[in-house]
Length: 111
Length: 115
Image (cartoon, rainbow over all chains, first blue to last red):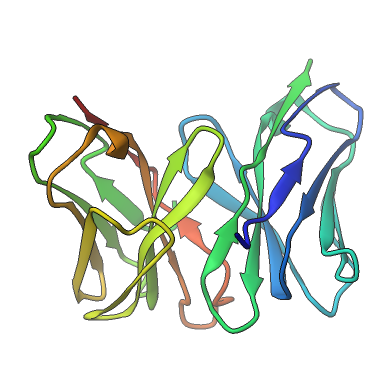
């Protein structure tokens, strides 16, 4: 399967701490995306990083991509209770336009 | 939710009955997708469409069919529902004019229970 795999499956932290989630994949990609899903809702796009980029920022989000290791990380700085959600990485692979989603990391931020 | 609606939002049906889920968009995006989401599996692609009357299978297409007769609507049909098709179904769109083709926008989901 080309599916991305997130690590950890679940993460619980205190408000104000940083949260780091990792994603690994198996085959070459064109780009990698991160999405957030609040309970009972659809996914919301957070950030896209292209295969020729190594790092990207958006507000409190920082995404890194290491194509040699086929891995990416999502860092949420100064987390808030409202960041409580599931986070998914999604990879767009060379030769196709279908996006493959991982199983997600459930983040719980305690106030 | 970026102009995407799904109907119905909830449905309970019996094994063996046909079921059709509807996805409607007002964004004029080219690509439309149907996913199912189950615990521990993330989102798995069922079928997708890259234009009117142009569709293709995804990862878990068995037991499902789709149709797209116009840009706005993408229908997912379970020909004969089974309990293994109990899931939450999401529609997504991408590829709007001036937008990033890979960025997907999701509908609110349909919770389907097959008894």
